[in-house]
Structure formats: structure tokens, C-alpha cells
Image (cartoon, rainbow, N blue to C red; front, side, top):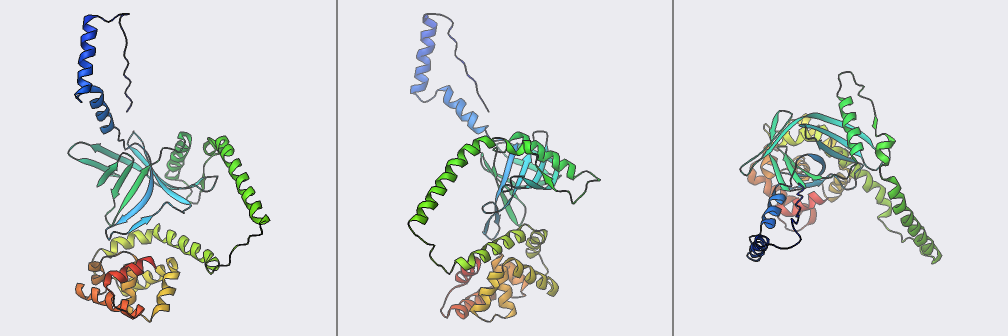
Length: 348
């Protein structure tokens, strides 16, 4: 919110009235009661606006697990909330210069914030929303909370093109196989500025590389070099798994009764082996796991709390803690608590 305050002199000399007002103004400032300070505070309080571009940054689960969905990923989730009450949800490939996108949702929303309550309704359904600060919000999805960061750096013409693409995608007779790509006019924007920035960087990199070669340095052999490709593949598999419809359905299912059926466990194990192949390799190298132990490890990896693990393994809550402690000893040959196993499994 912009405040434009202008002071205009009505004469070339100070009259008695002008002098009195000036002295009163100085007294207010010296006593800490100046109006400009109050006005500034009001402006800061009214600065938040739900309208704008919101970028999905993190998922926070009930178990305390946090998943960064922004760093290192090709596609980034955006929500565009317009002042006419319409919102758009897309995945945008920020690495590809053509900016391909995946339209996901377009509907209406309602937002109202007061000193007593905050109301947020999207697609006719009320959602709990937390205003963390003027540029960060959290939208509760039940099993997890989506953390959005406000990002107004996307050019206005690009945002318009994205919204038009989403509107096209949700027309009754649209082709679902259509690939949506931003027009060149919408993606170039300030490309000439980036050229001036990129050229010196490229020249610097070339200079450093030449100096490196001249000095005869060689890359040190490392056992990690052979695993780099595998690690990147595993990360990509994990990203695809976390963003899949199966994963979101699974999260809701794991917080419900009755226990998972045998075919559900089989599907879960298949999905997990595809998403976390290194996780299963490391487990099998450590020791031979029973069916229950493997299931406890899988659910722990997903950040599911012990109470839900007990339900889906058909065990008492107290026995889940004992299983984790015994499993830690089985893996490492030393005593450890359930928390020690959880930390190992989550970071595996």
C-alpha cells in the first residue's frame, strides 16, 4: 500500500500559526507520539495481500518431516491468485528456456482477514491458512501443510500467458495431450539483461578452466564419482513419487483405519522400491529383515508416526518402540533407542 504525503507551503514566511504547528509537530516527535510513525505502522499492518504469484517451497507433514519441493527440481508449483477471485495452479519448468508447463487447476477462491479470524475458501472448500509473514503462507491439506513463498518476479505477460493456457486446458473439448509452452514474447522479457550478466560469468569460468588445465591439475579419483549418476536418478525418482497422485492418496490412507491390506502393502513396497532403490539396497546389506521389520522401516521412511505404524502393522503402540530398538541393535550390534533407528532410516 503506497502512501503519498505532500507538504505544501502557503507563504514565503512563517506566521504565528505556522510556528505553533511546527512546535507541536516537534513535540510529538520528541515524545514518540508522532503521527508519521503511526501511519507507517498502519501501512505495515495492511501490507499483506493474498493476490499475487505464490511459489510452493516446502511440504510440512504431521510427523515433523519437511520436504523441499523447490531446490534441484525442474518443475516448480505455482498458484496465481487474482483480485477477481480466480486462482490458477500449474507446474512450470523453470530450467527449460521454452518454459513448458503443466496446468493442474483453475477455480474460485475467497479470502478475508480480520483481527479475529482468517477465512480462506478454494473451490468451495474451506482451508486453514496461516499467514507466516507478508511473503509466506501455509495452506493446510490435512496430512501436510503447503508452504508458499510470494514470488512477483515472473513478468506480467508471462503470468497472463500461463493463465490463458490453464483456461484453455480446462475447456470441455480440449486435447489432454497438448503440451503448453510459453510464447517467445512472454519468456524473453529481460533477456538482454541476462546476456550482459551471463557473458562475464562464462568468460570467468573459461579463464579458470584454462588456468586449471595449465597447472596440470587433474580431478581426484573418488568413490563418489561412480555414484553421482545413481544419486541423481534416485533423487528424480523420489521427486516423481512425492508429486504423484498415489503418494497424496497414500498419505491420507496411512492416517486412517482399517490396516493396509496385503495387496496395498504389495503396491506400497513396489512404489517405494521404485522411488528409493538405494534405501532398499542399504537395508538388505545391513541385515535380514522380517516382514514386520521391513514394514516398520517403510512407514518410518515416509515419516508416519508410531501410532499409525501400530495400526497398519497390527501391533500394540508400545511394541513398535521395542521393534525399532531391537532392529537398531540388529543392524549395528549396539544398543540404541527407537529415535536412533528413526534418524538412521529417514536419512538413509
